[in-house]
Length: 402
Ligand code: ASP
Image (cartoon, rainbow, N blue to C red):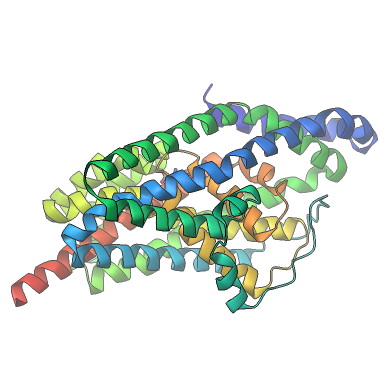
């Protein structure tokens, strides 16, 4: 049985056992079962700082080549960041209309009230770490991200053999983090069961519907983003009709949907873009691997939906500045999300922590994460292809004009 099936079975088991056991068993469950769930959440928290730091440094250093490619690099990164930010906003919009989780109203031990909103200037001031070690100790994600970005730029500037060495070291460290996360995720079926059982015992069957609404919101959001953003990009600046674009990239989309890995899909994305959409080798070999590393529109959209879902479930009203924070951290988190199955979930934990939402909400998402991963990875890959088409088309125009 694959891990995602096991996690799903754990979700179903927690619902069945919870419904049978009912509120009377809450004392036993809270004493013996809930702490195991807390241990699982702590294990995930344990990895947030190391994985964010190392994978963002790797993401930044993989931009090293942009110097060579100059204009293409800037255009690509700007488009990636722009489409990612739009994706989160679409996620908010869909979740704002769909209200996933509203009415479930779980209570949490964590801070259930929205934090006092800091002013926007204060957010920027707090983003810059006075002491990165202190920020790491306190798991303050934004300052860690800023420090990681600077570290990446520093490494690129050092250049030569020493930079290569450091890039290898960070790459290896990020890989170690992903291996550890892999081990932790092996425990996810137990963790999810132990986290959800108390919730179901206490709240009964009303926990089920909200999960379906999250899946619907992510799926609908992905379709809206693809149709609105990628169709527009490919028609206006990509030289392809939306239909031709989606048809051209359909193999990669299917593969992404089934494998949940942008990195694993990369060879097919490159083939589709080159053979079906006429993207040059030069552009596709730069834009697409970079996209599989740093461009995750689907993951960003999922973060928007899930953050609102968790806030709804725990009856928290997100302030505008918290939403702004989610857009900012979500966009940056997507840079650090590896193109492998389930990576976005860990980054969601980071966003949830940064905004001060209850981490228990993650257990609900974990049970259905595989389905969400299928949708978001499909969008991630399509987004890479859309940007490659735009960069290729505009470059050709530029060269013809020159
Ligand atoms: N599975 C996604 C991808 O490979 C990343 C994620 O988990 O969001 O693109």
